Image 1 (cartoon, rainbow, N blue to C red):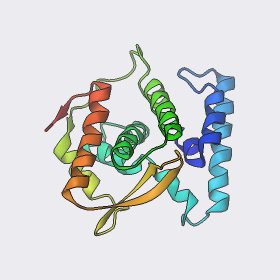
Image 2 (cartoon, rainbow, N blue to C red):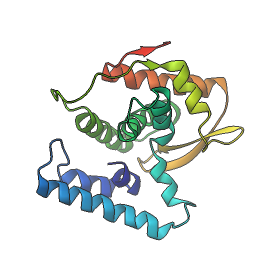
Image 3 (cartoon, helix red, strand yellow):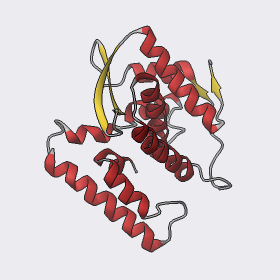
Image 4 (cartoon, rainbow, N blue to C red):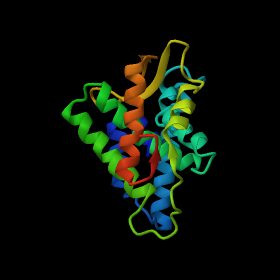
Length: 195
């Protein structure tokens, strides 16, 4: 989902047309994997050295790596990035003017993530670890992609396409990050300490 969303609304729509919902039958799984791999191939071909387009594949990672580290890896990388995408979308809504079109696309992505990561009634999903907000924020602060004076994030922009943007390292932005995490975990019904 992340790779196709990063490529743009048209590619994400193509991905959704494949009905990539849990559980996937083998034929559908092959089509979804092929779509994802061909999309990733495009990123590698146009930006072999991670200078521009390929950086968009970091969508969800800054928020997600903090979730992984903040739970001592009790949340896996894939789940962490999925949750990170939800947090990034929440942050984008609070900090960026999004068009009605962008809000619709972001809403589709969020719904897909929720249905795919945490399908209702799946008994194999373990109990979520308790999130410690202070630790999540500490891990977010130390992400290697940030600059000394700015947070560097991949977020949906005005038209719904992903953009690499910078925000000043100040208290207002820290509070917006805090709210993005709180909103995400409250939406999931996951426990979070330090709210």
